[in-house]
Amino acid sequence: MKKILLTCLIFIIGVTGQLHAQEESEKEVKYGQITELPRQDDAMKKWRSNRFGQFIHWGLYAIPGGVWKGKTYEYAAEFLKSSAGISTATWDSLQYQFNPIKFNAMAWAKMAKAMGVKYATITTKHHEGFCLWPSEYTDFDIENTPYGKDLLGEFIEAYNAEGIDVSLYYSVLDWHHPDWRYKLNSEEDKEAFERLKIFTKNQLLELLDRYPTVKGLWFDGTWDQCWKDNGQFSYELEKKLKEKHPGLVVNSRMRADEYGSRHFDSNGVLMGDYESGYERRLPNPWDIEVTKNDWECCMTIPENQWGYHKDWTLTHIKTANELIEMLVQCTSQNGNFLLNFGPTGEGDFREEEVKLAKEIGDWMDDNSSAIYNCGYAGLKKQGWGYFTQNNDSETTINMVVFNKPINGKYRVKLNKGSVIKKAYLLSKPDKALDLEEISNGEYFIEAKKVKTKDPFVIIIELENKDSKKFHQKALT
Ligand SMILES: C[C@@H]1O/C(=N\OC(=O)Nc2ccccc2)[C@@H](O)[C@H](O)[C@@H]1O
Image 1: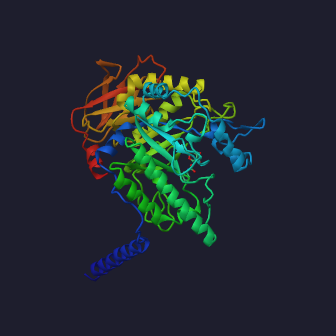
Image 2: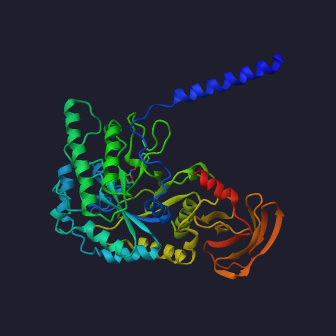
Image 3: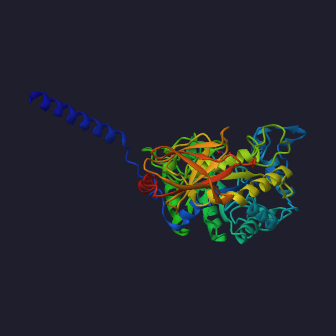
């Protein structure tokens, strides 16, 4: 009896200690998450079902394209001002050269539509501070260029006409604005940054006023101490923008809490509406933690260029197959994939980008049912490729194959209790593939005669609801 009492006492002390430790680690966060996640409103469901987007980085940096006074700078082309040590006055004078005579918003939108993107995110203002729209808060904008017209408005109208949602990238970091400060070291710094905050809020409200059809704001340039010291401001700004624009979708990069913690607050709670830290990188394909939140990977075609760079021989240029695999992996882990294009200073795309858009679009024409409105299937990653499952489906699972087994037999491990009714190639729905049950929920699917050199989809139809998947879905 004494032994039992002692054991119970030790257990109670242990649990109390853990709870106390947990309470201690939980900070009181006043300026953290605003919207309970994952959002289930229509705007977020549409964002989630879009899965594939086009990123556009366009600004004055597209004019020099990474080359200054005959010297090529290998660093990101949109950072040429700092890479080449160019004065703000010299850089800003590029404004008077910006005249993208080849810009055709409808042609851009049709290329994007053919590629299969459902949304596009365009830089309204990158770190250089130049605005692609006529802003009443600065003269460093499109209105004061030889082009003169509302380029951003043309872009939004053309993409919306093709049924493509548009989100707006906005850099808080602003090299042009005299009140920008990296750190607030003095009262003067603080006063200047207060003016910068008002300017920022005014421009964002102006963008939502001018372009009411936009679906989201993609914040960037928020890593410096000045912004991390202003968690309350970013909290109140997100609230105000969402009150003004119901359904607005905001990335986690906008936010810092009052302790300076970014993306996730000091208790690890995601801020904004989706995680936007996957930049030119993806999670491990077997990572299921990442499936618990909405997230987006933004990706360049060269290794490190967001803006147009004249020299694409400097790094590896990703192939269509590599980019398709990234898109499929994101989908398989409940993420979106935002693929970047960097238009030239004249307003057209380099031929490599046009070719890739066509190759990806051709694949999407045949396989987008495994991408749009699809997500994590609640199954472990397996060697032949990726599972995805339509968010409205209960009994069909997509296998997107990138690695064919040499014997043409695909080992497929489903949840215990899952029974395959039939499996077939998406391209040949009338021809059932041979099945061999290995054990409870585990099968070989035989697909020996697949000729294509491209990734392809095998559809699995289950006898019963894939209960584990939908139970997991309820929990997320
Ligand atoms: C999408 C990219 O975003 C950037 N920078 O991103 C980050 O610094 N990302 C970041 C920073 C801290 C944590 C996670 C991601 C910009 O400098 C770049 O020109 C491009 O617009």
